[in-house]
Length: 322
Ligand code: ADP
Ligand code: F6P
Image 1 (cartoon, helix red, strand yellow):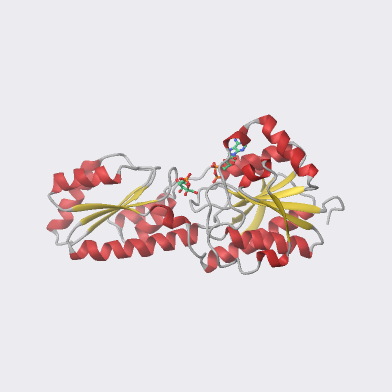
Image 2 (image 1 turned 30 degrees about the horizontal axis):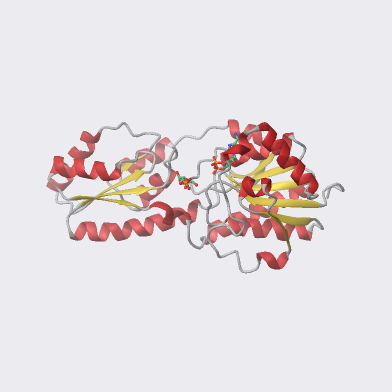
């Protein structure tokens, strides 16, 4: 362990994700095992600026691994984009004896971590978002729970949709990213999947598809609509008018961000949290932890933020075929 690292902080930022608590727990316990003190920073960067900082021991993270949400709270803090606010946050860290921080969040939160590193506070990012939209990693904490929650809800909508011989538009989360929609679309056997990355706004094609399927005797028609496409309710009205088939929209919303994390989310969050604590205690900074090609690795934040990610073409093609 680097001699200079005596105390680290941990915070969660941006949208919460199931598994964040498992990550916090791992950071706390691994750092303590390394002989380093841990402070919890509440409400993301907003809490850091307000100095909402608490000491954390092993017992403070007991009975949390199975809980959804984040015990530290989270926030979106727009003023953190300002240089002088970032400098002020670094001063607050120094005042509280915090040598480094683990930031659990998405791309935006990584930019905040990068800013703190520029001001002399060591930082390590952990991928915490249900959206699976961080390019450097094959896995983000929360995605597995979110898609399982959404999949179960969509199965239920499908039951009633079939009974009533209706068409259903089900909107899942993902303002800019269609991974939840793609995974649920395949796992729920949806007839159409609309992703922000690929949708061509050709509603007539969907209408034709619904009419064809009805002629073939299909009792339901499930359309998974990513949040970024939006307008699910008005789309349902237009489709009903054009096809004559009763059409309903269901917006799953924030239920996808809550709930007890799956085994996969707890496991990845635990390993990534421990990994982050280890490299921070070793004195590394300006890095993000990722899972890539079957291994846990770390990247420079700038390198990670410059990576790009596309909806995998083959997987998208399969979703349209089966
Ligand atoms: P996520 O981390 O899930 O991508 P956001 O994009 O909302 O979520 O970012 C979370 C928080 O990270 C923001 O509210 C802000 O405090 C901080 N942040 C975002 N972008 C920047 C930036 N360019 N510079 C500094 N901090 C940022
Ligand atoms: O955290 C990711 C996410 O849930 C996106 O899927 C969604 O677009 C966004 O956050 C919603 O953010 P907010 O909580 O600010 O409404």
